[in-house]
Length: 402
Image 1 (tube, helix red, strand yellow):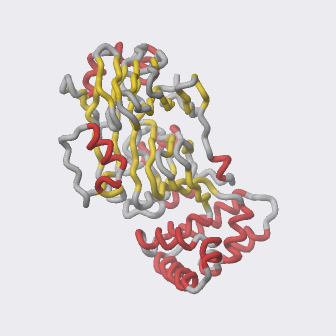
Image 2 (cartoon, rainbow, N blue to C red; image 1 turned 30 degrees about the vertical axis):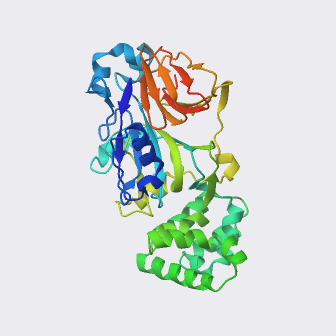
Image 3 (cartoon, helix red, strand yellow; image 1 turned 120 degrees about the vertical axis):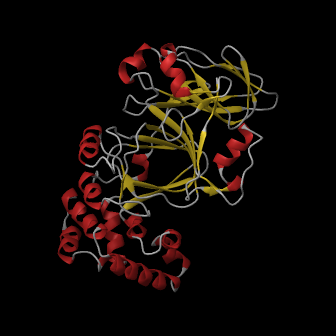
Protein backbone atom coordinates (compact mmCIF):
# COMPACT_ATOMS: atom_id res chain seq x y z
CA UNK A 1 0.00 0.00 0.00
CA UNK A 2 1.45 3.34 -1.06
CA UNK A 3 1.49 6.16 1.49
CA UNK A 4 1.24 9.92 1.22
CA UNK A 5 3.47 11.32 3.94
CA UNK A 6 3.75 14.58 5.85
CA UNK A 7 6.43 17.20 5.14
CA UNK A 8 7.63 19.39 8.02
CA UNK A 9 8.89 22.81 6.90
CA UNK A 10 11.04 23.63 9.93
CA UNK A 11 13.23 26.70 9.53
CA UNK A 12 16.49 24.72 9.75
CA UNK A 13 15.71 22.60 6.68
CA UNK A 14 17.42 22.79 3.31
CA UNK A 15 15.72 25.07 0.79
CA UNK A 16 13.81 23.92 -2.28
CA UNK A 17 15.33 21.15 -4.35
CA UNK A 18 18.61 21.34 -2.42
CA UNK A 19 16.66 19.26 0.10
CA UNK A 20 16.50 15.48 -0.26
CA UNK A 21 13.07 15.71 1.38
CA UNK A 22 11.87 18.02 -1.40
CA UNK A 23 13.39 15.80 -4.09
CA UNK A 24 11.65 12.73 -2.66
CA UNK A 25 8.31 14.53 -2.36
CA UNK A 26 8.60 15.84 -5.92
CA UNK A 27 9.61 12.42 -7.30
CA UNK A 28 6.90 10.64 -5.35
CA UNK A 29 4.21 13.04 -6.51
CA UNK A 30 5.09 15.05 -9.66
CA UNK A 31 2.02 17.27 -9.10
CA UNK A 32 3.65 18.81 -6.02
CA UNK A 33 5.25 22.20 -6.67
CA UNK A 34 8.49 22.81 -4.77
CA UNK A 35 9.10 26.38 -3.56
CA UNK A 36 12.82 27.21 -3.97
CA UNK A 37 12.68 29.62 -1.01
CA UNK A 38 10.94 27.25 1.39
CA UNK A 39 12.70 24.87 3.83
CA UNK A 40 11.87 21.17 3.45
CA UNK A 41 13.26 19.77 6.70
CA UNK A 42 11.61 16.41 7.44
CA UNK A 43 9.44 13.76 5.80
CA UNK A 44 7.43 11.80 8.38
CA UNK A 45 6.34 8.23 7.63
CA UNK A 46 4.08 6.60 10.20
CA UNK A 47 1.15 7.27 12.50
CA UNK A 48 2.43 10.17 14.65
CA UNK A 49 -0.43 12.56 15.46
CA UNK A 50 1.55 15.59 14.25
CA UNK A 51 2.18 14.08 10.82
CA UNK A 52 0.08 11.00 10.07
CA UNK A 53 0.52 9.14 6.78
CA UNK A 54 -2.40 8.51 4.43
CA UNK A 55 -3.02 5.29 2.45
CA UNK A 56 -3.45 6.76 -1.02
CA UNK A 57 -5.74 4.25 -2.73
CA UNK A 58 -8.04 3.97 0.31
CA UNK A 59 -7.97 7.68 1.25
CA UNK A 60 -7.73 6.72 4.92
CA UNK A 61 -5.12 7.46 7.55
CA UNK A 62 -2.76 4.57 8.24
CA UNK A 63 -3.55 4.92 11.95
CA UNK A 64 -7.28 4.43 11.28
CA UNK A 65 -6.62 1.48 8.99
CA UNK A 66 -4.58 -0.24 11.70
CA UNK A 67 -7.39 0.20 14.26
CA UNK A 68 -9.74 -1.67 11.92
CA UNK A 69 -7.22 -4.24 10.66
CA UNK A 70 -5.35 -5.75 13.59
CA UNK A 71 -3.87 -8.44 11.35
CA UNK A 72 -1.78 -5.72 9.68
CA UNK A 73 -0.03 -5.11 13.02
CA UNK A 74 0.47 -8.78 13.85
CA UNK A 75 -0.09 -10.45 17.23
CA UNK A 76 3.46 -9.94 18.55
CA UNK A 77 3.49 -6.18 17.96
CA UNK A 78 -0.13 -5.80 19.11
CA UNK A 79 0.72 -7.55 22.38
CA UNK A 80 3.72 -5.28 22.98
CA UNK A 81 2.56 -1.92 21.65
CA UNK A 82 -1.17 -2.10 20.85
CA UNK A 83 -2.69 -1.30 17.46
CA UNK A 84 -0.26 1.42 16.41
CA UNK A 85 3.23 1.77 14.99
CA UNK A 86 5.70 2.30 17.85
CA UNK A 87 8.21 3.89 15.47
CA UNK A 88 8.41 6.91 13.19
CA UNK A 89 10.56 6.79 10.05
CA UNK A 90 11.88 10.10 8.72
CA UNK A 91 14.05 11.69 6.08
CA UNK A 92 15.94 14.75 7.37
CA UNK A 93 17.56 17.49 5.27
CA UNK A 94 19.54 19.77 7.57
CA UNK A 95 20.80 23.20 6.45
CA UNK A 96 21.54 24.73 9.86
CA UNK A 97 22.16 23.15 13.23
CA UNK A 98 19.43 21.61 15.32
CA UNK A 99 19.50 22.12 19.08
CA UNK A 100 21.96 20.54 21.48
CA UNK A 101 19.71 17.99 23.11
CA UNK A 102 19.24 14.61 24.70
CA UNK A 103 16.29 12.30 25.19
CA UNK A 104 15.24 10.84 28.55
CA UNK A 105 14.98 7.19 29.51
CA UNK A 106 11.49 5.68 29.66
CA UNK A 107 11.36 6.07 33.45
CA UNK A 108 12.62 9.65 33.35
CA UNK A 109 10.19 10.50 30.52
CA UNK A 110 7.31 9.30 32.68
CA UNK A 111 8.50 11.55 35.54
CA UNK A 112 8.95 14.60 33.28
CA UNK A 113 5.54 14.10 31.68
CA UNK A 114 3.89 13.80 35.07
CA UNK A 115 5.58 16.88 36.55
CA UNK A 116 5.83 19.14 33.47
CA UNK A 117 3.17 17.99 30.97
CA UNK A 118 3.17 21.34 29.16
CA UNK A 119 6.85 20.83 28.20
CA UNK A 120 7.08 17.04 27.98
CA UNK A 121 3.99 15.93 26.10
CA UNK A 122 4.15 12.15 26.48
CA UNK A 123 5.62 9.50 28.82
CA UNK A 124 7.71 7.68 26.22
CA UNK A 125 11.44 7.46 25.56
CA UNK A 126 12.86 8.63 22.22
CA UNK A 127 15.90 6.62 21.13
CA UNK A 128 16.95 7.49 17.58
CA UNK A 129 18.97 5.96 14.74
CA UNK A 130 20.43 8.24 12.06
CA UNK A 131 21.80 6.76 8.81
CA UNK A 132 23.61 9.17 6.49
CA UNK A 133 22.35 9.60 2.92
CA UNK A 134 24.90 12.35 2.20
CA UNK A 135 27.94 13.40 4.26
CA UNK A 136 26.22 14.13 7.57
CA UNK A 137 27.70 16.34 10.29
CA UNK A 138 26.76 16.03 13.95
CA UNK A 139 27.93 16.64 17.48
CA UNK A 140 27.58 13.49 19.55
CA UNK A 141 28.71 12.38 22.99
CA UNK A 142 31.42 13.94 25.14
CA UNK A 143 34.82 13.82 23.49
CA UNK A 144 37.85 12.25 25.24
CA UNK A 145 38.78 14.31 28.30
CA UNK A 146 42.36 14.77 27.10
CA UNK A 147 41.11 16.56 23.97
CA UNK A 148 38.81 18.82 25.98
CA UNK A 149 41.64 19.78 28.33
CA UNK A 150 43.85 20.67 25.35
CA UNK A 151 41.14 22.92 23.95
CA UNK A 152 40.59 24.64 27.30
CA UNK A 153 44.31 25.42 27.50
CA UNK A 154 44.34 26.90 23.98
CA UNK A 155 41.07 28.84 24.28
CA UNK A 156 41.37 31.53 26.95
CA UNK A 157 38.09 33.02 25.74
CA UNK A 158 36.32 29.82 26.78
CA UNK A 159 38.37 29.04 29.89
CA UNK A 160 37.93 32.47 31.47
CA UNK A 161 34.10 32.34 31.50
CA UNK A 162 34.07 29.10 33.51
CA UNK A 163 34.24 28.84 37.29
CA UNK A 164 37.99 28.95 37.88
CA UNK A 165 37.90 26.63 40.89
CA UNK A 166 35.96 24.02 38.93
CA UNK A 167 38.16 24.50 35.86
CA UNK A 168 41.39 24.03 37.84
CA UNK A 169 40.04 20.91 39.55
CA UNK A 170 39.10 19.49 36.16
CA UNK A 171 42.43 20.32 34.50
CA UNK A 172 44.43 18.85 37.39
CA UNK A 173 42.37 15.67 37.72
CA UNK A 174 44.02 12.55 36.28
CA UNK A 175 41.30 10.06 37.20
CA UNK A 176 38.73 10.94 34.51
CA UNK A 177 36.18 11.95 37.14
CA UNK A 178 32.84 12.32 35.34
CA UNK A 179 31.48 14.50 38.15
CA UNK A 180 34.11 17.15 37.39
CA UNK A 181 33.20 17.11 33.68
CA UNK A 182 29.58 17.58 34.67
CA UNK A 183 30.50 20.58 36.84
CA UNK A 184 32.56 22.17 34.05
CA UNK A 185 29.77 21.66 31.53
CA UNK A 186 27.20 23.14 33.91
CA UNK A 187 29.50 26.10 34.51
CA UNK A 188 29.43 26.78 30.77
CA UNK A 189 25.73 26.14 30.17
CA UNK A 190 24.63 28.32 33.09
CA UNK A 191 26.92 31.23 32.20
CA UNK A 192 25.42 34.70 31.71
CA UNK A 193 24.24 35.24 28.11
CA UNK A 194 26.08 38.54 27.71
CA UNK A 195 29.31 36.99 28.95
CA UNK A 196 28.88 34.14 26.46
CA UNK A 197 28.26 36.55 23.58
CA UNK A 198 31.34 38.66 24.40
CA UNK A 199 33.57 35.60 24.76
CA UNK A 200 32.50 34.27 21.37
CA UNK A 201 33.06 37.61 19.69
CA UNK A 202 36.52 37.84 21.22
CA UNK A 203 37.39 34.33 20.00
CA UNK A 204 36.09 34.96 16.47
CA UNK A 205 38.02 38.23 16.22
CA UNK A 206 41.25 36.51 17.30
CA UNK A 207 40.75 33.62 14.90
CA UNK A 208 40.32 35.94 11.91
CA UNK A 209 43.98 36.89 12.33
CA UNK A 210 45.25 33.30 12.58
CA UNK A 211 46.55 31.10 9.77
CA UNK A 212 44.44 28.34 8.19
CA UNK A 213 46.15 25.55 10.13
CA UNK A 214 45.41 27.18 13.49
CA UNK A 215 41.85 27.98 12.47
CA UNK A 216 41.23 24.38 11.47
CA UNK A 217 42.85 22.86 14.57
CA UNK A 218 40.71 25.09 16.82
CA UNK A 219 37.49 24.34 14.90
CA UNK A 220 37.06 27.99 13.89
CA UNK A 221 35.12 27.25 10.66
CA UNK A 222 32.50 25.32 12.62
CA UNK A 223 32.23 27.90 15.41
CA UNK A 224 31.82 30.68 12.84
CA UNK A 225 29.11 28.76 10.99
CA UNK A 226 27.19 28.07 14.18
CA UNK A 227 27.64 31.67 15.32
CA UNK A 228 26.33 32.99 11.99
CA UNK A 229 23.14 30.97 12.54
CA UNK A 230 22.87 31.39 16.33
CA UNK A 231 24.85 34.53 17.29
CA UNK A 232 25.93 34.63 20.91
CA UNK A 233 24.48 31.19 21.69
CA UNK A 234 26.22 29.09 24.35
CA UNK A 235 25.91 26.11 22.00
CA UNK A 236 28.63 27.63 19.81
CA UNK A 237 31.13 26.49 22.47
CA UNK A 238 29.70 22.96 22.68
CA UNK A 239 31.83 21.34 19.97
CA UNK A 240 34.87 21.61 22.24
CA UNK A 241 33.08 19.37 24.75
CA UNK A 242 31.43 17.02 22.23
CA UNK A 243 32.69 14.92 19.33
CA UNK A 244 32.36 16.55 15.92
CA UNK A 245 31.70 13.72 13.48
CA UNK A 246 31.03 13.50 9.75
CA UNK A 247 29.21 10.33 8.73
CA UNK A 248 29.81 9.00 5.22
CA UNK A 249 26.72 7.79 3.32
CA UNK A 250 25.64 4.47 4.84
CA UNK A 251 27.25 5.10 8.23
CA UNK A 252 24.99 5.42 11.28
CA UNK A 253 24.86 6.57 14.89
CA UNK A 254 22.45 5.34 17.56
CA UNK A 255 21.35 8.05 19.96
CA UNK A 256 20.58 6.22 23.15
CA UNK A 257 18.92 7.96 26.12
CA UNK A 258 20.93 10.74 27.80
CA UNK A 259 23.52 10.96 25.00
CA UNK A 260 24.07 14.65 24.08
CA UNK A 261 23.87 15.38 20.38
CA UNK A 262 23.09 17.95 17.71
CA UNK A 263 22.61 17.45 13.98
CA UNK A 264 24.56 20.10 12.07
CA UNK A 265 24.24 19.56 8.31
CA UNK A 266 23.38 16.94 5.71
CA UNK A 267 20.69 14.40 4.83
CA UNK A 268 19.83 11.21 6.67
CA UNK A 269 17.29 8.48 7.26
CA UNK A 270 16.15 8.64 10.87
CA UNK A 271 14.06 6.15 12.81
CA UNK A 272 12.86 6.78 16.34
CA UNK A 273 10.40 5.71 18.97
CA UNK A 274 7.14 7.67 18.78
CA UNK A 275 7.72 10.51 21.22
CA UNK A 276 8.25 14.27 21.29
CA UNK A 277 10.39 14.29 24.43
CA UNK A 278 13.44 16.48 23.86
CA UNK A 279 15.50 18.25 26.52
CA UNK A 280 17.31 21.20 24.90
CA UNK A 281 20.09 23.51 26.05
CA UNK A 282 21.51 25.47 23.12
CA UNK A 283 21.51 26.28 19.38
CA UNK A 284 17.77 26.85 19.47
CA UNK A 285 15.17 29.60 19.90
CA UNK A 286 12.93 27.01 21.60
CA UNK A 287 12.49 26.41 25.33
CA UNK A 288 15.70 25.23 26.99
CA UNK A 289 15.95 23.27 30.23
CA UNK A 290 19.60 23.44 31.31
CA UNK A 291 19.19 21.97 34.82
CA UNK A 292 17.32 18.90 33.54
CA UNK A 293 19.75 18.35 30.67
CA UNK A 294 22.89 18.72 32.78
CA UNK A 295 21.53 16.36 35.43
CA UNK A 296 20.52 13.60 32.98
CA UNK A 297 23.47 13.51 30.56
CA UNK A 298 25.80 10.59 30.00
CA UNK A 299 29.22 12.05 30.90
CA UNK A 300 31.26 9.13 29.67
CA UNK A 301 33.84 10.01 27.02
CA UNK A 302 33.58 8.48 23.56
CA UNK A 303 35.75 8.48 20.47
CA UNK A 304 33.98 9.01 17.13
CA UNK A 305 34.59 5.37 16.18
CA UNK A 306 32.88 4.21 19.39
CA UNK A 307 29.78 6.16 18.41
CA UNK A 308 29.38 4.49 15.01
CA UNK A 309 26.55 1.94 15.02
CA UNK A 310 27.15 -0.83 12.51
CA UNK A 311 24.57 -3.02 10.77
CA UNK A 312 24.47 -6.81 10.56
CA UNK A 313 24.40 -8.48 7.15
CA UNK A 314 21.17 -10.46 6.62
CA UNK A 315 21.75 -11.64 3.05
CA UNK A 316 23.41 -10.38 -0.12
CA UNK A 317 20.64 -7.79 -0.58
CA UNK A 318 20.00 -6.53 2.94
CA UNK A 319 21.60 -5.45 6.20
CA UNK A 320 19.90 -4.46 9.43
CA UNK A 321 20.58 -1.99 12.23
CA UNK A 322 19.19 -3.48 15.46
CA UNK A 323 19.41 -1.03 18.37
CA UNK A 324 18.90 -2.36 21.92
CA UNK A 325 15.23 -1.26 22.03
CA UNK A 326 12.08 -3.12 20.91
CA UNK A 327 10.52 -0.08 19.23
CA UNK A 328 12.36 -0.23 15.92
CA UNK A 329 15.07 -1.58 13.67
CA UNK A 330 16.00 -0.46 10.15
CA UNK A 331 16.80 -2.62 7.12
CA UNK A 332 18.71 -1.33 4.10
CA UNK A 333 17.80 -3.13 0.87
CA UNK A 334 19.77 -3.00 -2.39
CA UNK A 335 18.64 -4.79 -5.54
CA UNK A 336 20.69 -4.67 -8.72
CA UNK A 337 19.20 -4.34 -12.18
CA UNK A 338 18.40 -7.70 -13.73
CA UNK A 339 17.55 -9.27 -10.37
CA UNK A 340 14.59 -9.22 -8.02
CA UNK A 341 14.36 -9.49 -4.26
CA UNK A 342 11.73 -10.89 -1.91
CA UNK A 343 11.88 -9.09 1.41
CA UNK A 344 12.06 -11.22 4.54
CA UNK A 345 8.79 -12.24 6.16
CA UNK A 346 8.72 -10.52 9.56
CA UNK A 347 6.27 -10.56 12.51
CA UNK A 348 6.12 -6.77 12.31
CA UNK A 349 4.45 -4.29 9.97
CA UNK A 350 6.91 -2.10 8.12
CA UNK A 351 7.25 1.23 6.37
CA UNK A 352 9.54 1.29 3.33
CA UNK A 353 10.93 4.29 1.46
CA UNK A 354 12.64 4.01 -1.91
CA UNK A 355 15.77 6.18 -1.89
CA UNK A 356 17.31 5.31 -5.28
CA UNK A 357 16.37 3.59 -8.54
CA UNK A 358 13.10 2.69 -10.21
CA UNK A 359 11.04 -0.39 -10.96
CA UNK A 360 8.09 -1.98 -9.22
CA UNK A 361 7.21 -3.47 -5.87
CA UNK A 362 4.51 -6.09 -5.47
CA UNK A 363 2.66 -7.47 -2.45
CA UNK A 364 -0.75 -8.23 -3.95
CA UNK A 365 -0.72 -5.53 -6.65
CA UNK A 366 2.35 -4.06 -8.41
CA UNK A 367 3.23 -0.47 -7.50
CA UNK A 368 5.65 1.62 -9.62
CA UNK A 369 8.59 2.73 -7.49
CA UNK A 370 11.05 5.61 -7.71
CA UNK A 371 12.89 7.70 -5.11
CA UNK A 372 10.39 9.11 -2.63
CA UNK A 373 7.75 6.40 -2.95
CA UNK A 374 6.71 5.16 0.51
CA UNK A 375 4.99 1.81 1.09
CA UNK A 376 3.30 0.13 4.04
CA UNK A 377 3.68 -3.64 4.34
CA UNK A 378 1.52 -5.68 6.70
CA UNK A 379 3.03 -8.03 9.27
CA UNK A 380 4.03 -11.47 7.96
CA UNK A 381 3.85 -10.32 4.33
CA UNK A 382 6.51 -10.23 1.66
CA UNK A 383 7.31 -7.54 -0.89
CA UNK A 384 8.91 -8.38 -4.23
CA UNK A 385 11.15 -5.58 -5.53
CA UNK A 386 12.05 -5.67 -9.23
CA UNK A 387 14.32 -2.90 -10.60
CA UNK A 388 13.88 -1.39 -14.04
CA UNK A 389 16.45 -2.12 -16.72
CA UNK A 390 19.76 -0.34 -15.93
CA UNK A 391 18.50 0.80 -12.52
CA UNK A 392 19.60 -0.42 -9.09
CA UNK A 393 17.03 0.04 -6.33
CA UNK A 394 17.89 1.16 -2.79
CA UNK A 395 15.32 1.25 0.01
CA UNK A 396 15.08 1.58 3.79
CA UNK A 397 12.57 -0.49 5.76
CA UNK A 398 11.54 0.36 9.33
CA UNK A 399 10.24 -2.53 11.46
CA UNK A 400 9.62 -3.33 15.11
CA UNK A 401 12.63 -4.94 16.74
CA UNK A 402 10.88 -8.01 18.12
